[in-house]
Amino acid sequence: MEMAEENKAASATLPQVIKAVFWSFLGIRRRAEYEKDAVRLKPVQVIAAGIIGAMVLVLSLVMLVRFILS
Image (cartoon, rainbow, N blue to C red; front, side, top):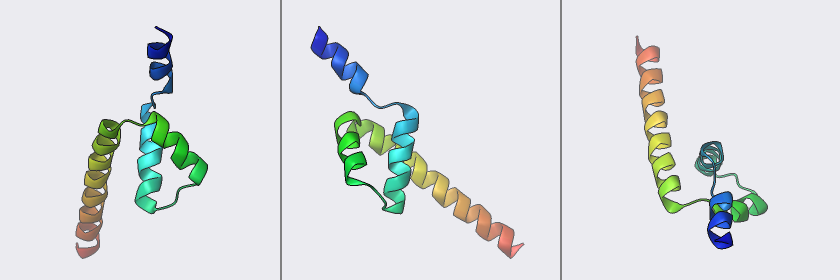
């Protein structure tokens, strides 16, 4: 039972996932932060946040180009 509780406590929160993906997009990561993220982030969380982050980035760029060209 204790092992299951530790796994739940070690899971990353949504803001932690977003922060990790954001810094990864920029390519700036401290080794200590990377090691913490490697332990607490689940691959599904990272993939989902990465896809959403990529969509937000692309949509932002499209909107910026449309604004500039108008």
